[in-house]
Amino acid sequence: MNDNILKEILKKSYKIQLNKIAKNSDSTDGNVYLIESENSKYIFKIYNSLEHTQSMIKLHNFLNENNFYVPKIIPTKNKEYYKKYDDNYIVMYSFLEGSQLKNNIQTIESEVISKLAKEIRRLHDLTVNVNLNLNTIEFNIGQEFERKSILHFDLTKDNIFINKDEIGFIDFDDAKFGPSVYDVAITISLLFLSKSRGAELDKVKTFIDSYYENDTVNKEIEFPYIKNIALKWIDYLLTKNSFDTSTKESFEVKKKLIEKYLYN
Image: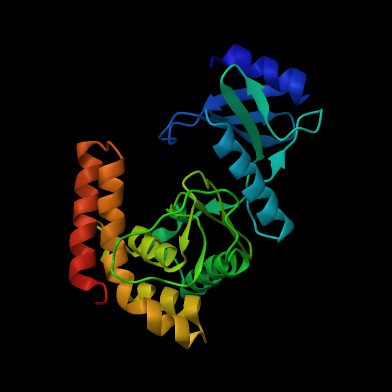
């Protein structure tokens, strides 16, 4: 979809006086645009699946209703949550203010890690048995977990925002429904195990202690499987995606760190 078409949709359907439109180069699928008007910024996403579009709308509305710091869906002037154009579905999101965690990842403080872990736990607790039509995920690890919820499934340092005392999340496009502990293992692997910084086990401990806090029952059930889940997640990603050589190598490094340092 070219810029002229997008500009026309913005003008007619959203009544936005456009100052600038720029494609987000960080978007893997190339479907994300940054929109700037005179007074505001927005994120413009183009989807090719109505089912996925509706799931994203339901999820963001649900999270906003429950006071999570996530982007809001901006309705059209006709109060529709998406705009159809040919075979595409366009959704406008508010721009989340704050600093991405990637700007602070090397010096992230224990207090921020603790807040992050508790906010992820709040997401899981709130969405126990609430699917919102997301795809279900199950890794074959020889254990059935009773505690299942919505999973962000992609909490990279780019998708976590810090705005004063708030922890915010963006980009739920990979969200799934499945065992809550999957998000624990994935987030630890994404944030605290890397080629550049190695295994930051003190931060891993802070995250786990804050996430489970006084919940000794679920910690005892889930904790022994975190390592295996993290390894299964990497295998899943490498099977499902066509990554470039550099990205594949970074995941292989992460896998070695998980095998060596994460708990059995």
